Image (tube, rainbow, N blue to C red; front, side):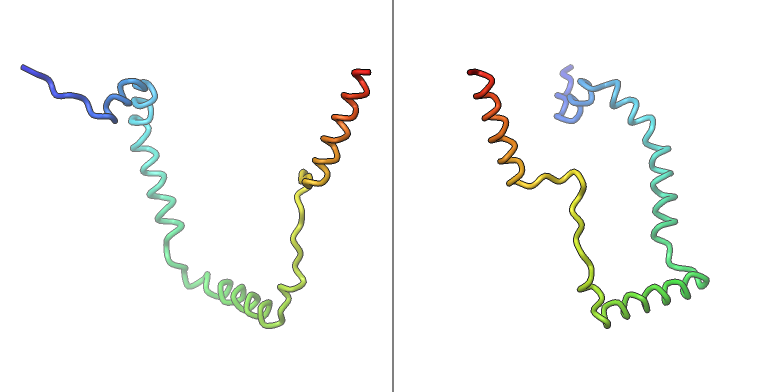
Length: 102
């Protein structure tokens, strides 16, 4: 009696058996966590939440109406290095290598 050929995913599961078995064992627990988070995050707001929501929305509309968004600035991250600076450093390093050779 001939056995059926394994499909692509079954072959992958065989190759990575230990990983697959571990993940398969963890799936029910992770699914329950995901469902609990989904129920909490996707639940409609309660009556006690409405005053805070309305207050925040009022702040947003006032912010837009008074055009305060024009005063916002974009901050450059502290680890940012511009292209010009990189070019200068590359040139200095090349020059230092040339001087070290002679």
